[in-house]
Image (cartoon, rainbow, N blue to C red):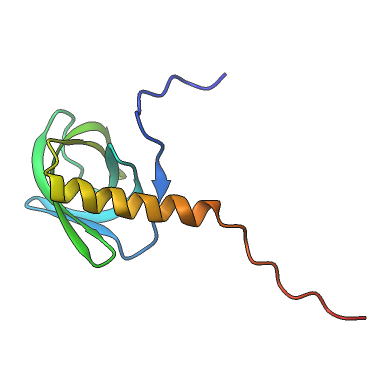
Length: 115
């Protein structure tokens, strides 16, 4: 039986090149949703820490605030977004929608050889 999941939005895997920058450090984005992000960081912040950071999503820089909800030592931290501005929310929603569209597209099958 699956464990209870408190997330309000599904997590989506993010491609390389998307990352987070904050005063205490930076890290790659392992997964992302409209409600939060998992930041890969070998020295994650403690649970309950509220901090401001910037998401690099494709070509967009998205300033956000969040609270660390889960800390995994030497791995990273799960951060829930707090009080997103309208502009930040719009950029985040556009990026997440693009990830969702990519997941729904059927995989391109290779051309079959003719006999």
